[in-house]
Length: 106
Picture 1 (cartoon, one colour):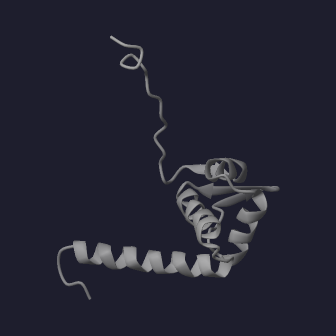
Picture 2 (cartoon, one colour):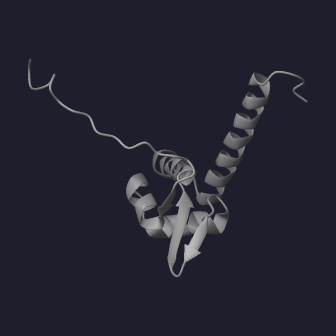
Picture 3 (spheres, one colour):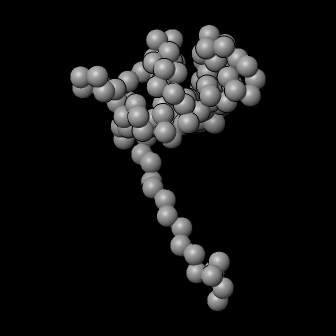
């Protein structure tokens, strides 16, 4: 066996209901804390709770934060544009889930 075949993979199961701190969110998404505060002010993400100065977010905020980071860095989209893009993506996801579900899709 080669060393490559013996390598071990590690990972962490991420539950959408698990909370992460603002620091963990920033590290996971490679963004500055100021950007997260601006996203909260724009209503793009919402903390699940506050303890003193520490904000806690659901894991689902990591995906939204990564999308905003990519829109801003890759396409030069401003914060309002990123918020609109996320709103449209949410709407598309809702419509797709309705199409997949059995029964009337009204």
